[in-house]
Length: 163
Image (tube, rainbow, N blue to C red; front, side):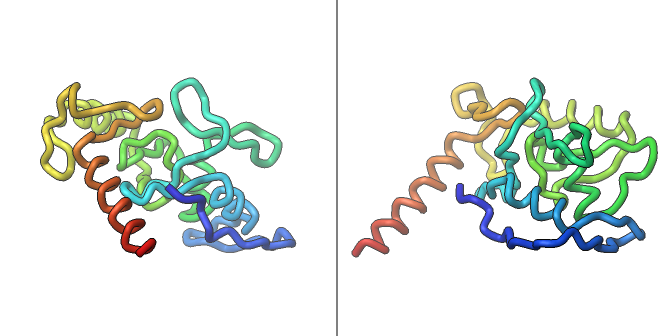
């Protein structure tokens, strides 16, 4: 993983008009980017600051402690429609990548979470067994075979760069 490198000092808090007419400061976007790291395997923006006991990122924003993924969604995509919840399509609770989120009803969110637990294989087809799966943070599971492949590619690129 690498630290998110796209944060730029923005100086003033100029409001930015987003899709749907939502107003969010550029500072909110910068804080989200600065406080997360990019997982190159999953493309999740993993929240690197405080988390609650369930594994969701927390941020103090406008004087209130809020869920980091909700602030990220509002900062980059616009307001969350009333009565809807944010569903992490990647199933990673501490992910704040707005491309991995969708506003849905509570019932849909619960169903999707339940169905995700019933998966028998990872996205690359490896069996999802207790021997081949590990939990690296609360709410996040990874396939050992996929992780070995990522490490092998990284080590090969480092050897190539060194020679």
